Every structure is written in structure tokens, then in C-alpha cells.
Image (cartoon, rainbow, N blue to C red; front, side, top):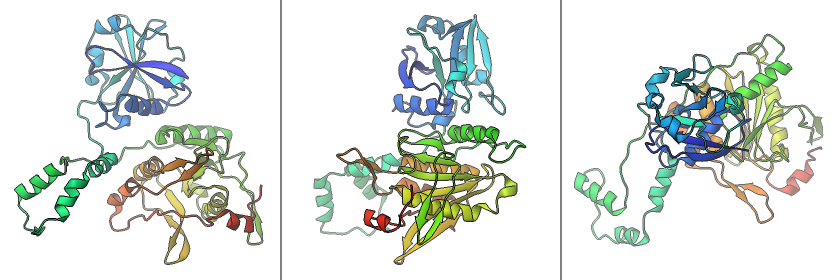
Length: 398
């Protein structure tokens, strides 16, 4: 872990704050870590909108507070142009008084900008967007509702005269909101843009393609602990069920433990080049069943070319029957943001013996229904088998 000292461009004192971070992770991951560390100052911003600038002087990594105070130009977002991280990747550099200000591209590993972070220096300048777009924070709704006190609730329920809702006056509503300590705020739900993926001319599962899509997925998903992305090439889905045996490998697994990737799998990802899409449907259905039997959590499988085609598979219970469901009506931006929301709102609880269990789904999981009101995604995932005894009756294989 590296100790990276970051400083907000809006901080006139240039105090800086430390972020402990694995420099092998991406710049996008560092943005998320900085936003979490600088909360609540950055709560109104999407982490992806931050511009990170690596500070240096000739061959020395980082600048002192005194050196950074010499020149204010690099604190202005406009100095880095309309695309601070560079067209189609890359970085931009400013040279001021012998100092180097280099923007950091979200898809790159932090280590690409230097792995040495000397103490007593500021290493990363955080430049804020000129016109930030607020992001809806679902926790705001929960905290507001939790702030309702029991006495107020009692007073409302004991009212002798009921106010009809449709003709309620503005003063009546304002008074009620004040008594409930509810502030009225307007938010925009922002669907962040996701970059395209370029497949090489080699075969779909070639080492080059694998290396590229793992790096791309880490960059666009920005996974936060305890979730990590793993290659599935060494995770055999050997399964025995209903007198049938099948085996194989899924391309990627998102799990909450590296010691038991399959047992803590939440999402499986099957990738394909556009010309290979047809055979993936049957493959995804078998992979979903295998992962469901091996993971103690509700599982979802995503089949995608990382560009225009995203199909989700999941299990759910409805009308006392089990269903294997699929949906392919999300575009690239919506699909990636849905995966991020899904993971962010999985409620993991740790039992006394240290085992992680999954709690109830959260409201935020359904945010993207707004994008598809005519055909909302249920995504009430369920397990194919709920109990250990059921699992023992249908051997999972090894």
C-alpha cells in the first residue's frame, strides 16, 4: 500500500490529506478513494468527474506546499482543456516554473505515474469540474426518513382533522416538512459515459484480449472493497445436478473474497466478440445455474461484447415458481452503471464466525428503471436452492 498525499484545488491552505492506496489499481479507483476520503466536500460530485494531476519537479516525484503555492494556474480546470485526460486515453501536461502537472487517465494504473511517493510532498492535485453535476445520493432519502422522531409520528397520527392531499396548501406542506426536518432538494440522476472496448484481431480468449478486457472492466466498474474482479480461467464450474454433469469456465467473476471466488461470487461475466454471440445464450444459462449452486449469494450473469450488446441473466421467484430471466434492453452506459449500483447496494452482513451473508436488496438497485419505464427490470434475484440440505441433494461437484 502507498501513502499518497492529495490536495483539493479549492483548498487555499493546500493542507493535503493522505490516501492509503494500492498503486497497481487504476486511477478511477483512486478517484473513488479520494471522494470517500474527502467526504462530505465532494459528496455532490461523481468521482469520475474529478481530474487528478500528478505533481513533479524534474525527476523528483511530488511538490512541497511552498512550491505549489508559487503558481495558481494549474488549479484551474480550464488550463487542461475540454478533455483533461486526453483524447482516447493518454494524459496532458503543463510545465510551470520547472514544475510538471500531468493529468492522470482513469483507465491507467496509478503506478504508471510513478510508484514512489516521498513523504513531506504533495503527490496528486485534485482539480474539480467547473460546473459540477449533482448525483442523486440514495442515502439522503434514508437519512431523512430516519430523522423522523417518534413524538412527531405520534402527533401526526393523533390529528383530529384529516387534510385531504390534493387541495393541500403550500404553507401546510412547508410546515409538515419543517416539523419532519426534511429539506427539499433536487437531484439529477447521472448515467456516466462508458468508453468503448476495442477487440484485437486475435481469437476471443487470446492472452492479449484477456489482458485488455480485464483492464477495461476494472477501469469502467471502479470496484470498491470488498468486491474485486477475477479471471475465471482457473475457476472450474464443475457441476452435477439432476443426473447431469457439466463443466467449463466463465471469463470473469466479481466476488467479495479472493480466498473463495466461486463461493462468494455475485456477478459472472461472459465476454464475446460480435461474431460469436449466438452460442453464448446456452452457455450463460449453464453458467448461471453452476454459479448459483456454488455461491452462497444471489448471482447474476452478464453476457456482453463490452460495447453495444449487454444481456443480463438472473433467477427469481414469482407466483410460486422459479424463473430464469433475461434482459437485453440496456445500452452500454446504463448496463455498466446498473452493475455498479447493484454491487453498491448489496447488503453484506458478517456473522459471528466471520462468514459474509447477504441482506435485503436496497432501493437504489431499481434506479435504472427510470431509464426504461415501459419495461422495468425486476432484478429481484433469488437462489435456485436456498438450504444446505437442498444443495447436498444436488451435488455441486468440486
